[in-house]
Length: 163
Image (cartoon, rainbow, N blue to C red; front, side, top):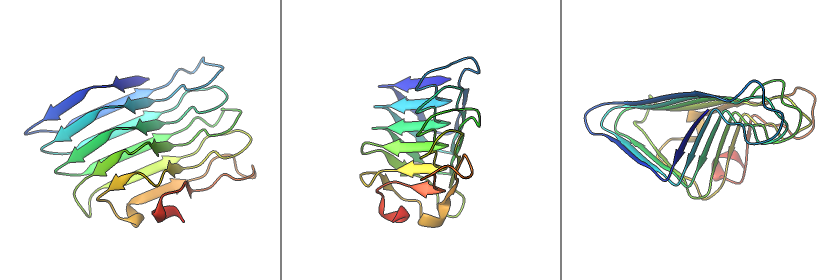
């Protein structure tokens, strides 16, 4: 996958487009498609992330955003898919936490997550209450993974949009 760690990315007059895929051979944890931590991304245009989590047991997210600010003048589009063959818990399509910021143009921005397989809590989107966003609640579209497993939700977390 792609890791963006303690980085600043600025596209003053353009777009930022990142695609990442976790390994299909991994057997353990944290095999994300895209992992952004402690970073800031700004675009005069759009920001687009497409992440596909790899195989493994737990926390193999399509996209994980941790302590990161994404600021787009245009559309902010995040599409994360956790692998259906994951076997544990918390294999979320998109996992957003730790005071992250998501800002994009209204009406055209969307966050879409598809949870993976496993034993439970494989949410489409998981977002904590300390996330700041200009997007509205309908801009977050999640689909839970592992049909029939306990506690897997389309959208989960402590953020007010999901309560």
